[in-house]
Amino acid sequence: KACAFVVTNPFWHKPDYAFELTDGAKDQLGIDEAEHVSVYAIVTLREPFETSTLNLKAPIVIETNERRGKQVILDDAYPARFPLGGQKSEVR
Image 1 (cartoon, rainbow, N blue to C red):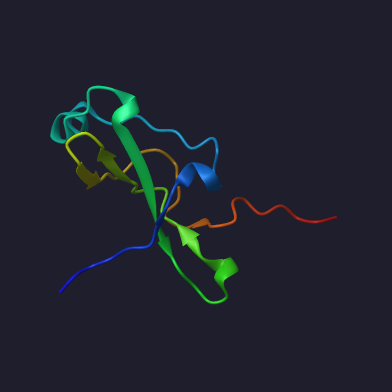
Image 2: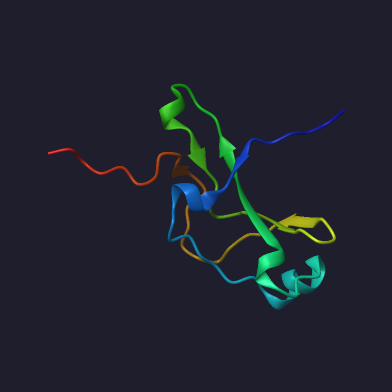
């Protein structure tokens, strides 16, 4: 059996998304340079689609040369349920 997740680039939905990996995570993944890293957020699909969310609290980080990845839990104040469309603002 296979397991699959819907993922997206979190920077498309929250351009100011930023975090530091621990030295332990960098060592596990073999990360030497930032340009060899891809970051993805898991999407929780909901009905209606506009209520779908991203998990910004636990992104998937992949070292692209050796193709090693892991999900990391961030200590930052990012939510596990960020609106897929970004922060909603009230229309006045």
